[in-house]
Length: 515
Image 1 (cartoon, rainbow, N blue to C red):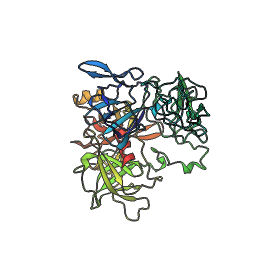
Image 2 (cartoon, one colour; image 1 turned 120 degrees about the horizontal axis):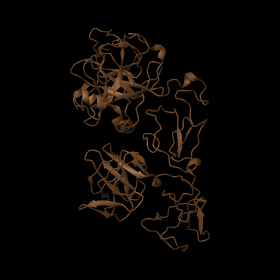
Image 3 (tube, helix red, strand yellow; image 1 turned 180 degrees about the horizontal axis):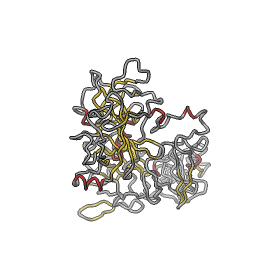
Image 4 (cartoon, rainbow, N blue to C red; image 1 turned 180 degrees about the vertical axis):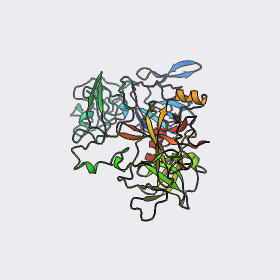
């Protein structure tokens, strides 16, 4: 699937989307990709499970309790995240008379065959828009019989539309077309195979392209799924490892996370290029309630106009901090004069502190209402170094295994248990939601994550809110939770609740990309 946060609006009134109740099975493999959105009749649906329409066969929609055939196979559907409505659509963002508009409230799923400009195998499934041959001759429309008469006439289901290159006879040379040159009947379009359309350096550890098939043509499994192959990995550091999944085979292609690639001149040059890394030599002993002073280079101090610390946050991109909604009066709060401070261990660093970075906040973006998250855009990118680093985001909907020991960090109240003038760090073991529900009498939501209570009284308090619950996974620190306000600090008889970040990773990426 290919995904984005946009809407595709059909300018031609003849272009209409057919609405369906959708339900896409979790873990299902699909030729669809998330992307922009298109509009037509809308009906309730639930995106995230396998669609009631058989994508590989005749499309259907529900009407009067029965399934009815649609006039043409769907090429896309879009999902309105607010109203939970979606619809099948017979066009994509590349179709005539269609306009693409960005919109954070929509997800568009489009068939990859209609978006890719390279081919797999002989390209029989290619549905791109190339319309000239490899020699530059314009292609003849498939419905036309001049200048060349032919037998490959278009139908709603064979993909022979406009004058686009196609391969209806599975020619080994790939997609071709009849040409507009009376002296040249047909010619190959010279479309590259996907594996030849990209280039890599070294072992490909820095590759960020879109090839999604192995050398043998097998479709790759999504990284955020454990089906059909349960590969046992959770959050994976950028560049850590990549697998080509062919049958039961797994082949590692990259370096361990953080190992210097041959393309880099020295290890120092890459030590802090990736998220979730810190210099453990800076870790010290000391305390949050029951905590110890330590090094958390992605934890930021959010300050009001008077320069007073009031909440924490986590640096997820050089110009973006994530925190909690409860730290701010509203989603339209005037934050002029507010700033974040990074790179210092001190709650009130002096002006001579060489590591301190103070950056104004220029925008606040509230997340979905149930998330209680906010993203803060900074006036300029933070400078990454040994004291300022990004924390990794987890895979979408990732669940942290129970008993994973994670860290909270902040400059909040310590209740006299620690030095309140420095950044304090404490460790807490993750509790499964089943165990947490038993302890809290079923009050835990899917959007929440629990840590077990400790008899010594360790936990977050006022001033820590918005800060990270960071878990060390596959050699990376990952932002699995965000600290939220609680009635009592560091309770010894009840689990602590955090916002589960993985449920909102898609929203986080969209906001950072679009704003």
